[in-house]
Structure formats: structure tokens, C-alpha cells
Amino acid sequence: MGSRTDHRWRFDLSVAIRRQPAEVFAFLADIQDAEPIPRRAAVKMIKEPSGPTTIGTHWHERVRMAPGLWLHIESVVTEIAQPSRLGMDFHSNWFAGHLTYEIRADAGGSVLGQHETLQPHGPVLWLEKFIEPYLRRNSFAASRTCGSFSKTKRRPNQPARPVIDR
Image 1 (cartoon, helix red, strand yellow):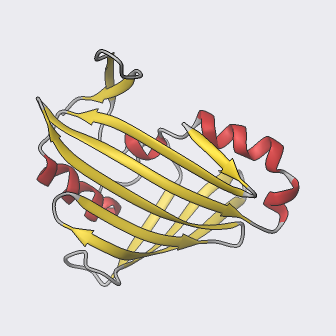
Image 2 (cartoon, one colour; image 1 turned 30 degrees about the vertical axis):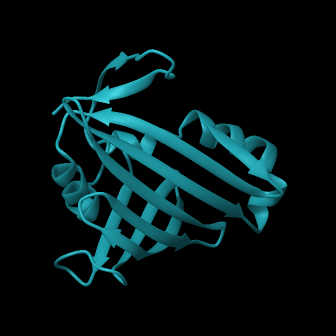
Image 3 (tube, one colour; image 1 turned 90 degrees about the horizontal axis):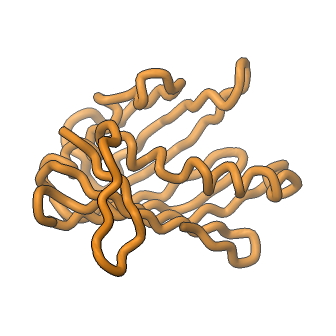
């Protein structure tokens, strides 16, 4: 699910989604319109400029980590190939990194790949042995933004991966 080199964490995830690639891409390109996801999450996002997502589009995100503790994340789109790829750089006071979504057609919908490199800094480095396992346990959170999990479907020689319903 993830690996670490020096103090960089890498997460490579995939999830089957029962929607066509163009629908998945449109959802991710305008994710701020669907938040908070899940509904109980404390996430606020603002996209600048409004309108179509292009290289240079920014998201200003606030994530509630605990009561009274908000994490501010700034993201900028660095790569776009509609409907198959969306890449962005991001940073906060606690970390920086790069996230790429790859979407490919699959029987019954799409497979969404999430490839993320995270470079912690500041106080996160001191808490690394606690934070990294937490991130690993919750690494499907971004994949969940496309819907709710319905069941797990296994294919021969593939690890289990959640299937998202419409």
C-alpha cells in the first residue's frame, strides 16, 4: 500500500468504480462541489479560478484534524489529460508532495489509481512513527470521495480492492 524512502512516504492505491472514466475525471476535477466527503468529514475546499480545471488551477483546503486543529493545504494542478490523468503538487506547514490520479476504463466502469508521494517536515517528522501508520490505515480516504463502498471484488492474482457504487 505504501512505502518509505528516507522521510518520503509513497502510496499507490487503486479502486474499481462503477462509473465511466469521464464521470470519474469530472468528479475529481471539481471535487470541491462534492465536499464534504464523506458527509461527516470536516473538509472545506475552494477552487481558483472557478470553471474548468486546467494546469495552474489551485485548491485551498482546510481539513479538521481534531477539535480546534485545522490543517491548511494548498494544491496546484501540474498535469491534466482528460479523462485519464490529473496530477497536482501540494503543500502545508506539515508536509509537501505530489498526487496523481490515473483513470482507466474497466469492465463495468473504471479503475482509479491514486499515486501519492508525501514528504513530511516540521513536527510531523518527530511524530512519524505514529502518523505514518495512521495514513496507511486511512489511505483509501481519497478513493472514497467517488462514492460509498459497496463490496470487495477479487480478480485472480490481484489484491482485494473496494468497488464503489453509483
